Length: 131
Ligand SMILES: [Zn+2]
Image (cartoon, rainbow, N blue to C red; front, side):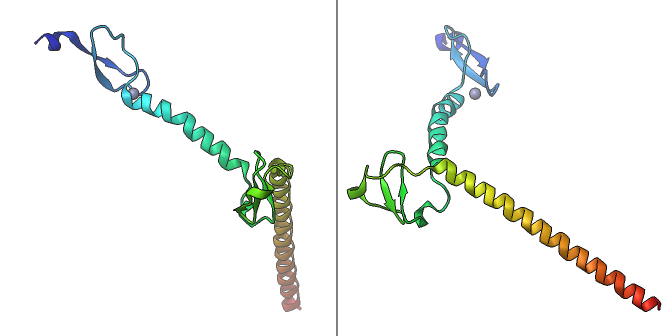
């Protein structure tokens, strides 16, 4: 009975779920939100880590991680650790983005050219038929 009296319900500040708290507690955050808050930084670190390596780094002849770990075609070669400067991932990504843009531009131009050719040939045919 004492427990019943001492307990009250408050809304979680984040997800607004009602939760049971003791009389002294002044509301706050439920365990679910607390857990997700604890997990969040971990995920963030993982994303940062992931983005540090460009796609297909395993296929590169030599990829040097930030800490100096050397990978040869994706295989860690501890003997070479620290013997090479870290691979400049940023410039690789930039270069790739640039190439992708250029490729897309080229493709668009090709399509435009083809469309123009089709239209021209269609137009020419039409004119021919008229005669
Ligand atoms: Zn919550």
